[in-house]
Amino acid sequence: MIQPPETIFTDATRVSCDGSSGIRTTGAFKPSALGHPRVWLEIDEKGYVECGYCDKRFVLKGGPADTPIDTGATQAA
Image (cartoon, rainbow, N blue to C red; front, side, top):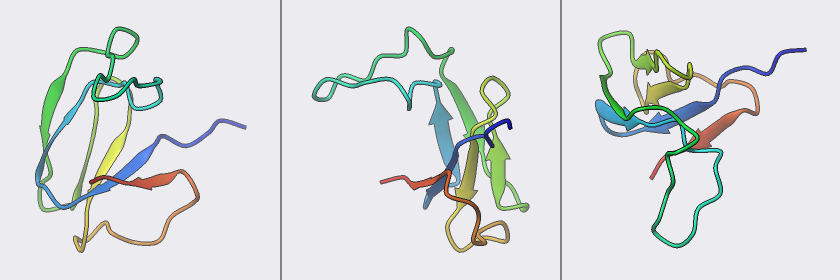
């Protein structure tokens, strides 16, 4: 079975994605060498946006798309 794309809940309507969330980090260093180029995404009236590179979904907390989903979700700081 194919795993669903990662979902991140955020308070911001503008988010960035470089595909590196599953890569081990060291301190404040977060490598993107194995991810993709950093892109900036804007959450619109749907309440979510998906990255065109890695399909990661960013959902606006309290927005129309903020509904309970499966266990693949994480909270963004």
